[in-house]
Length: 64
Image (cartoon, rainbow, N blue to C red; front, side, top):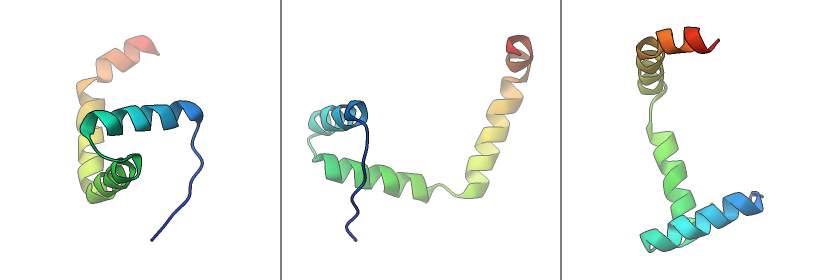
């Protein structure tokens, strides 16, 4: 599937720079990032988020 998206010039430059550093095309890096995003299950994400929230609960209270 081909997909065209609009991103900010700042995001585009970051994507190009990171892709260059990794030795891949910006398109390949963007596709890999999407694959990575979709490979994390909702349950895994929720468990990680809960762990982070619990770990930093006191900090969040002080910052509020």
